[in-house]
Length: 402
Image (cartoon, rainbow, N blue to C red):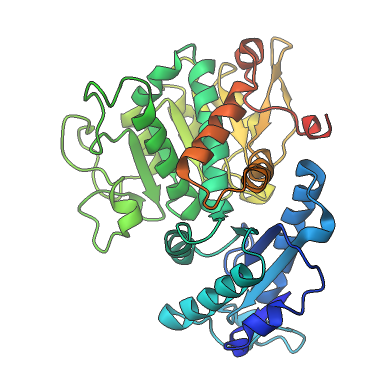
């Protein structure tokens, strides 16, 4: 279904035009930030359709009980606005209260007809991804896949990386993690990783960790983010570097990625930037000096052209003990000693079908952070110690068929 900003005041009657008496799963987008492609306006409808295909194939949801939704609130893509064949509203995107009024009316209409339906938000630009998540999560059974689904899969990989480095899971709280990308996906991963650290057995009880504990160095297009950055988004501010015992000497506001990696010597380099090749040879060679004998590199952006690096780059420049994961599909690499270097794909489809199905079967009214943490920890537990030693962090997608 398509709902337009011009339909304001009519959405309640429109929702009753959908022919299915019952809908269990809804995926909705406004097409504003299709990963790797940007603002596609109404042409982003393929994303909700594709996600619901996965619900049907992987979670066994009845295909007659799913509903893909496009909220057409305009587009800021000038090329589309000038295209005579573009089918969406030919106007700039709504902002502020006008925008929220459209989403509010849609959510109320859905809840009125199908109060038990789960609503998944997909590919909303950062400011609205966080705003709508906080606005609706306590009122409706909903979640944001970019903020929470990506974060859950990344957390599972980060926990696996600790094991691959030969350390107990409790050492996750001591991992030094450099994160490139401060959008909705990046901040979603940071929030979930932070909460996971605070949940580690015993740490919060003995006061070892607190809200001020910061094992992350976050960079955006302007370099390292510190507390001296002006006009910091509140979602990013809690991860900005400041001044204290955990700070690295001579790391300043706007420091480059190479400079940060060289000085921090992180255990993990996590990319959610959408900038293809940003983990170049110089960055990867700097990761070779990591404080871990098995540095972990996560190139999470997709499609493949947007990946921060390739597995070949990692195993060549960082070393054959490196651990690699990506958001795009890559082939495994044959190393010089004949063994495989695994190109793990950290795919959202590992998590969101289970989150939706679990919420549906349990009759959950809300999807909590604890549910997402449990799903991430469960995903991490599927991998055997033997597989971890080989550098395998995620199960094969083929396991969906089992």
